[in-house]
Length: 489
Image (cartoon, rainbow, N blue to C red; front, top):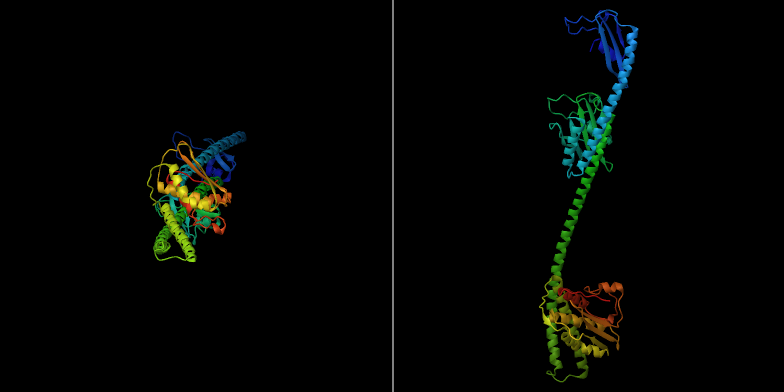
């Protein structure tokens, strides 16, 4: 306004008034009858880094009361005052700056526990309100072509803003740069978001983009009813805050992306599982149908071959007898194949029944050796059997364990050269019984050993050895169902 003091502030110059009654800017203050009226006045400006920061005002009821010496003394005093005021302001500025930095650090730590964008927005708005004291704050999320207000103060504000239109926050998104606007009335992009008529209109604005992976995710916007209320320090601190928000939002986005991928993968696995179940069901149906369709004619073929070979149908010529033997061997082979297929499916589906009883393992081995003796004799193999003096009884399914012994010894005989040796050994290892079958056959590579107990293993072997490829897999299943283990060396 007007007045000599106001003039000193505006001009930055000292005012040496010999008689205020002659000064057109003099404004007489409230009259106090006990105090003589002012006649002369001396005003010395206290000038700091940014201009006049104070005025020393001395008045007298006498005209021309102040000398040049008075002015010089007050000039020296004003310089000391300016220095000390700037020092105090600097200390206060540093204190406030450090306090704000500490608050921003605590805000960054609190964001690490946030699980949603809404939580991040709420924590950020509260931090800005507490640290800076701003009361016009908006946290705006970029969604497709719009800015959506997630949180802010006051609550009654524009909730959605199109990125196709104007706005200082829109410009922050498009340029990916902080917008520091001292006077928004002079900004052609300004668009008011306040709907509360009781609020004084905003005059300055600071809009800071939240950027992650070169993409603007959100905008933190603060406004003030005062002109030029934000400075470079505010801008720098708000950008630090935006960096913390960026890290938190990027983390949540990664988690959401991961959860989405996990859901997609889970759905794929679920679908694959359903398809496998359907395939497994179809395989069961096929094996059941195939074995049934094979067994029916096989039973008839075996019955008729047995009938013919018994001589009940008449005398058999020698050349026909040989052919009947071939038919008999092949029907036995097919019957064994169907039995193996059924056993393998029962093991895989957990439907193979095990009926345990106390058995003498040495006697069981003797029975199996007697069964394979024709194959041993046919290839002139030497069979060595080593058993301890007394083997304890074991609790197992006699038929299934016998099936394991039969498969292992037949397998050894099949892959042994004529005249070589097969060694079967039983060892009592206190808590368990170890049975080993050793032959002098063609051997296996380490790679093939790993596949040996799989159904239909992909193992290279001469064609003349034949076999269903299920015997050792069935052995493995039976042994494991008894709580044991089987391996090849």
